[in-house]
Amino acid sequence: MADHYFHPTANQGTGDGSSEANAQQYSTANLDTAEGAASSGDTIFFLDGDYTSLPTAFDNGSTAQVLTYRSLNPLGARLLKTSYGKLSLGYGTNNLTSTSTTIVRDFYTQNIQWEGKTDGAIIELRGIKQVDTANATHGLLKGYIAGLNKTSLAHVVQGCSFTLKANNDTGFIGNMINGTVSESSFHILFDGTAGTKKIGQYTDFDSYNSSQHPTFKNTIISCDTDETLHTGLRDTSKLSYSCINTVSYFGPVTAAETGTNFNADPQFVDAPNGDLRLRPTSPCIGAGTAS
Image 1 (tube, rainbow, N blue to C red):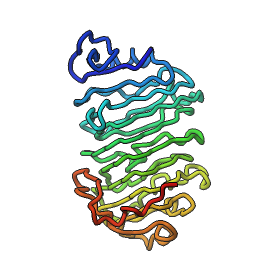
Image 2 (image 1 turned 135 degrees about the vertical axis):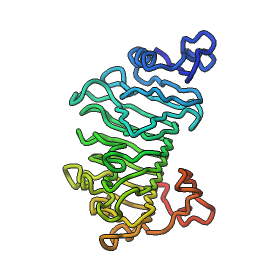
Image 3 (image 1 turned 180 degrees about the horizontal axis):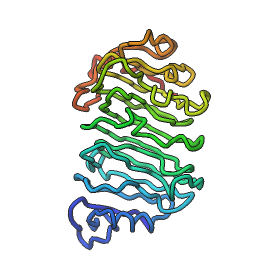
């Protein structure tokens, strides 16, 4: 199959999904059919609009396949859940070791728990803007990029912004082994008892092996209240050229403030409402690295 196109509410043209002009009306059944017919390297495009009837999984159609799900226009297609819920990515059933790569690009998303579906599921999130309205039930990105602990795979989070709501279970990225997070911003709206958990504590950021912590570069991590980073996120061999803006409840975040990292207000345009663009006076501008 070639690329496939979905419209949020109605068939366009012939409705066969072969092009933007002939986009098929979205439904979970139609998506399932398109996934099953997809070949490695194909893209499933979503035209602008709100998609609220979401499946529990983007089910990559076959083993060893690379399949991309993409908003046709950046942030034009909106994947929305009214309450916090899972969206698994990958091929097959849980604990399957066959490798697949699922790329999700350029969507506006809300209240989605990103999860690797199988042992062999490689996940790439690129250009995602997520603005939550509900608390993550297992902390921050413990919920959003959970299930990446299966094997040491090359997961990627690149060019994304997440405005996250959390209670006092504040895991940050749960069990993400050897992944790479870059050019991304995270702002945490903490809706709980400040200081009872650390950002990253839910899984200790250990990912089974301290040498396998995910790598953060050119990334901003900001919190709106009195919290701190767990020691797993203070590993400067894994955290570089990044701005860490949080008040340290449990003691100084000394490691994160050394080397190429610094602690400062990133000066987002409107962080509480999900606008994580930088103001012209932001200290983060020019503070990263191109390498």
